[in-house]
Length: 419
Image (tube, rainbow, N blue to C red):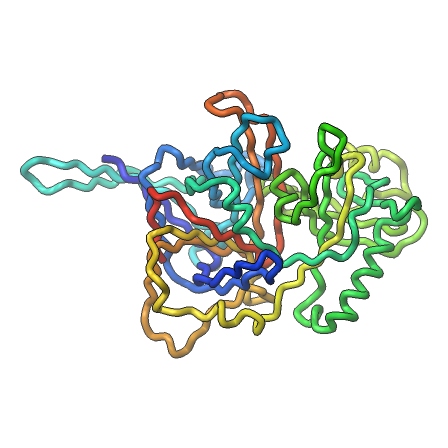
């Protein structure tokens, strides 16, 4: 019998939290702990790994993040009911592992061990170590329904502006939007909205600058094939359906051709140089060559809308009771998986690291597994024809670099987990 063991160092483990049943309630506030999380599965054939090369063969490979990917099963999805009928969908959450450069000298720590167990009728079983491989990614199939990860998701994003039609953009730079019938600089309405938000929430910048995001919805998400408008979607539902979320990295002010430009972080996943960098502004005052080059890698489809959002986590005191860890959690046979994002507590963090000075022992939480990443998340949705080896009919990707985002879901009945 072959046994594969995958080991990874992550930023934190999520404390079990009480989930509000109110759809309009605040996002559950994550609390992180140090510890060990174990995930057991007999479906090793559904898991996939990518070996890490000892030397990077190119810039993209060198700058790609090391990640764990958690995937649902392929099943018909109610959220995708308006697409091609007869398709099945799988949704995936990709989370980077921790930076361990100051722990063991390696940028990240993720590897797989292979063991062989031989059973004999008379002697004791023998266990032989076969190999160890460093990994750049590992795919874990949770076996749950694709819509479960949609219903179990929450992110502390608050609307700043109404959706506006994009009338001018170049690559990752948003130039003009339409308000009413007038085309205005992209930053004009946002600057007023941010100032209003700060006036109403004077402590919002106490921990640092606001995190502002642009939600880009393609035209196909707003108008169906029959010409009728689609029903409104929440932010996370829109992201799973094909919208993209980009962090606003700079812009505003300026004059001439640069007036009101906004720069968006262009990454949609954790692969390649765009995952770690921002393209910045084109040199509009020189010539058109820079504009043409930047426009060739545009991230905003024609006739899209943009809606600006701000990171607005609920106050810690609002749900402190839900975050208080209890060693007498109710026993359950259903596995729960919590995947979350945060910011490093050594800087500024919305994920609070538990520091209970009275705790002297180790807590054991059966049927609970998860991880918190300080590197954000990437969401992927794949739709295909059942039992077909053809390429997917639809594939969407977006980054979700919003601290205190979480997905709370249950694994399949064949999974077991513990912290």
